[in-house]
Image (cartoon, rainbow, N blue to C red; front, top):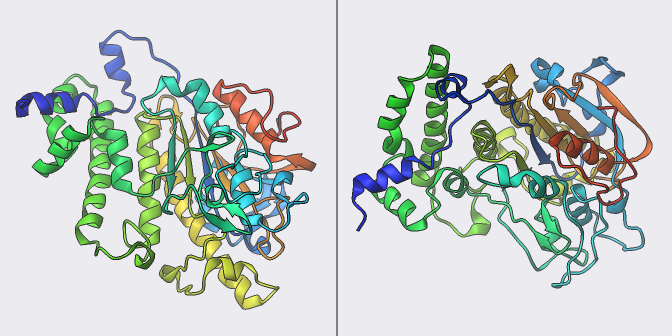
Length: 434
């Protein structure tokens, strides 16, 4: 059996660290430019467009009621108008807009209408990026969700559940399944990579950081005062996420999956924020540079007791112009924006090089349906946050010419990642207005 000291020492080497300039200087390595990160965050069922859309144009605009929680971040994101996903429309395939909205969102391809094993859609933009730059990080990409995974079965009007429960596609027939359990995401990011060793660590009931604290203290003695503070903040953040996961596991009551209120943790908002915190840590430590987050699958009938919405989201989305129903949809839209604001603030408040983690990122937030009552896939509700390492100019409303495929935006983002592609789905060229 491996001695405990040896086991702990080997585990310590697996903990990724944030960028620390003074440590780089101490080891005589040249200061490298901060890498560019890219994330895609998906909201289901469309939005209340009247409450979503800001007024004005360009930089002279007023945030809408839905976007108000982002007010302090308005210089860090743009509102995109006029981008379409033509391949999410029926195009002769009949009903199934929710499945197509998910399947098309990152691929720009028309999903083959089947509930069998012969699924086909296309490689997604995140996986194109991962294929080009994934070798530079521990994880090529990180896929997150709050829904349990599904890769087969019938879900929406003759479409496989694989379309509706996956955003990320490695190739036309192979989704990259998302993980909903924060514990498993944490272990994937910070565990040893050896299931037996990780089980032994859990058996000792000690934090990963407890194993590496002695080494961290020795490392801190080599850092400048600013980097010592950064190291302490980082270690505190990792421990905070781990403790929240442990508490959620400790107090969770085991019930059948279909009766669990909202997964792990028990409240939906806490679940989303924990997953966002894990994405933040993954970017901060350069564990990955590419991530997707399916907040909920399109067609989701989740309720929102935290904001006193007890009707199912998908059913509400068929509002038929009812003012009370539209008000409820607006509350749900704002709830999701509040979770996004939590994430963007953490990214903004994390220093890196000459700027912040948010400055070095490109974060697309939105959905594949505009108005849930019409099931339309044009002029989608979209935000683009971050400065892309100086290549994006946020703080604006950006209008796309009529009929612009959303995949044109993706081509432009891939260029900025150093992962050039000739085409994605129905793209017709790059979208350089961003």
